[in-house]
Amino acid sequence: MSKSIRFQLKAICLVLASISISPISLASDSKIPQPHFNRVHHNKEIVDYMKGYAAAYPNLVTLKSLGKTAAGTEMWMLTINNEKTGKAGDKPASYIDGAIHANEAQAADTVLYTIDYILKNYGKLDKITETVDRSTLYFVPSVSPDSRAKWFDEPATASYPRSSPWPFDDDRDGRVDEDGPVDIDKDGVITTMRKKVPLGLGNRKLDPKDSRILLPLEPGELGDYILLGQEGYDQDGDGLVGEDSVGYADPNRTWGYDWAPRYIQNGATDYPLQIPETRSIANWALDHLEVSSVISFHNSGRMILRGPGSPTQTPVSAQDNRTFDFLGREGEKMMPGYRYMITWRDLYTAYGSTTDHFYGIVGAFGFVPELFGRVMDDNNIVRYEPPQKVGDPVRPPSNDAKGFDAMKWNDMLSLGRQFIPFKEAKHPQYGTIEIGGWRQDTGRMPEGWMLEEETHRNAAFVLFNAMNVPKLRFLDASIKKLGSRVWQIEVPLINERAIPSIPSIVIANKLHRLDLATIQGAKVLSSGIVRNTYNGQIDLQTHRPERLMVSGVPGFGNTTLYFLIESDGGELTVHYDSVKGGKLSKQIVLK
Ligand SMILES: [Ca+2]
Ligand SMILES: [Ca+2]
Ligand SMILES: [Ca+2]
Ligand SMILES: [Zn+2]
View 1 (cartoon, rainbow, N blue to C red):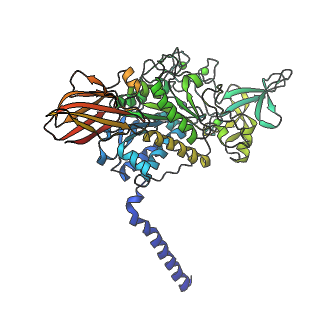
View 2: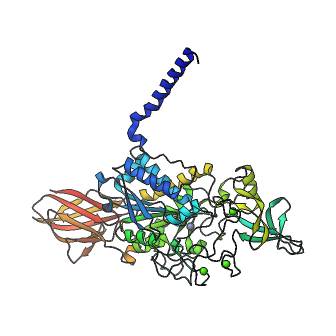
View 3: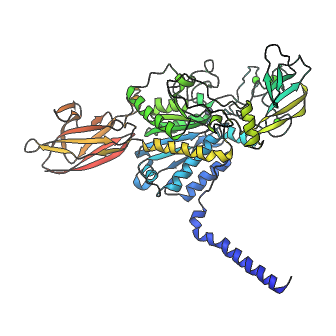
């Protein structure tokens, strides 16, 4: 090596060194987690990111465990709150969770994205700054962490594992979880099995256009293939394959409100909140009745579901329906192709679900965005279905991954990644078979390069709901002097957002106390709610007028407080303390 070349190399090394040094001046930024939302994340990564946010944003983020799963995994909750503007429990609040069904993987990433987007835009986007400063946001990205880890680490399918790994004897043979899916060909994925048989012995035929697809027989045809279903074999010799896999407790059928036992719906446990995952959240929620907005992410089908989950529940009041409808219909505009639907009426009956629990016990307006549908992709390769509206005849969500169009999509847009071609394999019971099929991350979630847009739209829906938790504000009081020391004060209070400070379910189910109005600095002789400002109609509170109990301020509505007080004049303060609307006060000068 010549001297001059050696010198040049040295110079290059120095330049490189200086390039690598320069970002250190932004040391605080380098701590900020930088996840990429073009893929789904393992539970361990999500927890690491949550710890990273707590370290990078100590003034906004706290992280705590709500408890442990049966397997001993912490149930992490990340809270975003600006302590400088008030304590978490004293402010209006939102609760957001995801992936209670572990196979619905991108649901957790959508919660992670929402956290990331809020933290990185606090102080930059006014809507986000306002929401963080005046409210609290509680996040549990992954409600079924143990099954999520299995879905990532062990052979899995698009729909398995889904449940909490709570041991259960599905086939009532005295053994639990003894016969689940088995990765026969050891390729790390559970796909499907099929067997070629002599013509006439089969119940399927190959699609003449695509030998990867089996078609049902038309009348008059003979079959030369048998569809054997999901990979596995009869591990306990009872003649059935895959009849008792891990679980099955469906955590989203274990919540405490409107729960129903297993003989009514599969997946229910022996009693409500039996599994620690939902029990730890439900216990937390009892101490957080300030929550008035709930978003619980699932996949798939492009729906914005809301309760009730069953027709046996008391119908939702007209007032609460208006709030649901406003939030849900705006959501349809934010997420093209998503349909705002009532679970039991437009989809199916589900007892003991997250959003019904939070509505019926906490009094919060909950939605379940069902992320992704194949039809959302485009209107070329995958057949396009126009969005369905509430009231239209119901059609099932379209996730059919078996059709030719999906295969063409796989070939042309995922370049064949999604579908594992059939290969010959030996099966302990069926002999020579073929194994192949869709990978676990297809059918219910987008490819990585499509993921971020849908994630963002759903995060924006979270923020839209969070912006609509009650926002109370006093307007100017009207003051009248009625005698030498007697004054009449009327104070209008408005709610600038959609969610009432007391949803009507709170009163119907007696979930928590009413809002409380008090006066500091004067003696209250009488108090009430003004029914009509112009003709002096007032609903007086006869008992303890110094503690005026108020049935809340409606969404985008107002309530006017009435006080008759005794005072020598000067200053007094009106305090308003609302479980869901926060605390506020107003100074009034008597003159
Ligand atoms: Ca069993
Ligand atoms: Ca396999
Ligand atoms: Ca078996
Ligand atoms: Zn689900």
